[in-house]
Each structure stands twice: as structure tokens, then as C-alpha cells.
Image (cartoon, rainbow, N blue to C red; front, top):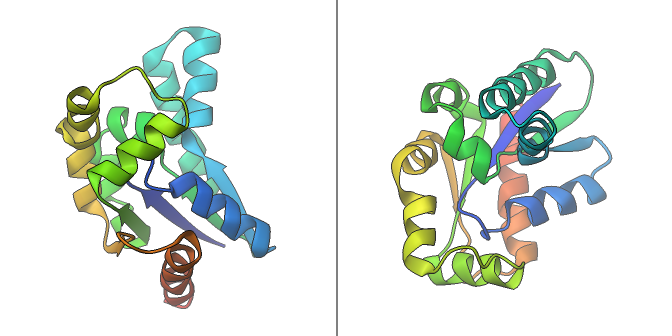
Length: 165
């Protein structure tokens, strides 16, 4: 079993790429951390519990002994609220997908994200803990100018390389 982490700004394509990889490659299981975080935050109305359960789920996945490849989509909440040190410990298996702010913000808006204007979005995506988490990633895929298929192939090349390390 191998565990890999996808990080990047909202709208960069983490969820789409992880979904496509899982659809095409039977050994891949996709995990979306924001779903775990939101489940506890909404159900229990407890931010601290949500962070704790998110971290526990990552540790649980890392301890599984099977033949699967786990691709963990570290969404906005997990990137922002789980301390950087937790992610830094996983940097050797972390892939940051980057693109232009215009691209990411456009996708954020196209998906119905209308809580923030560009200035607030930029601060949320690149301020504080988020930039520190992006910097943790050992691998970077710059998807600027690439189509989804090519970006996915670039991520897959890294997964293949890491799978054999």
C-alpha cells in the first residue's frame, strides 16, 4: 500500500484529477479529506474534533496493509486547519498542483463558489498555513496551459515513480 497526497489551491483540479485516476486505475482509492472534516464540523459543530478526526483518518489510511494506492485529496479545509507540521511529515509523498490564480479562481466561481471576491479568495488560498502547506510538497505539477488529460498524466508519472521507491 502506498499513500499519496494532492494539494493545491481551490479550483486547481485536485478533486477532478483524483477522481479520474481512481476511475481509470482499479488499484487507486480516492479519499477526500474535506468530506471527513465537514462531516464532523457540521454533525458535531466542533472544529477541533473535525481536525482531530481528519488527522486520525489520514493515520488510519497510512497504516493499512494492502495492495491499493491511496490518493488523498487534501482540500481547502484540511490544508488550512491541520497544522503544517502534520503535512510536512508527509512531504515526500505530496504532489502540489499549481496553475494561475485566474484559472483557479475561475473554476472556484464556476463550481458555485461565490462567498469570496478575488482579494478575499487570494488571501484564503495563499495566506497563512496554506502557502506553508504548498511549500511542503516534494513534487509540483504546474498545469498552466495543460489540459486535464496532460495534467493527470503528469501526476500519474509521479505516482508511478513514487510507487517504486
